[in-house]
Image (cartoon, rainbow, N blue to C red):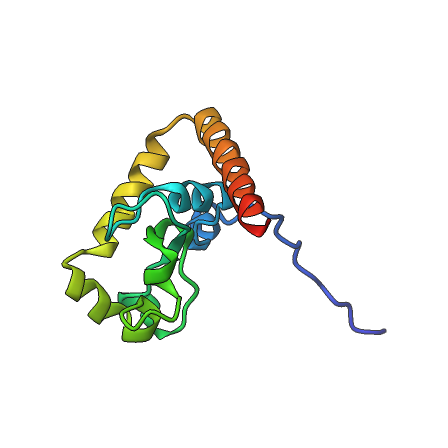
Length: 142
């Protein structure tokens, strides 16, 4: 008689409780649009292009993908441009030390505010900010 293979039932998605959800990093294009629309955290500038910079300090230094909850608004020229003091030129730790800012604390504070907002306001604000950024980008191309 051939051997009988006994298989265990496959667990459905969500049967593992909240463990899977806790491991997933926070991802939200709406949140990134909101952070990118805020004044630069170094200069306070609102006139020039700003980016939502993912803070790579601590556990995220070793090449792990940074969650969107660890982002701060940063002027594009201070972020990645060819400016000699730009963050990606001088390095994360040195940049924040030079400017006297704790980016993790700032990012945590911004994300706490986002989480406290009602979901319908998050979506509404994010859509408005994304539309505004598209309009600004389109006006610069002409």
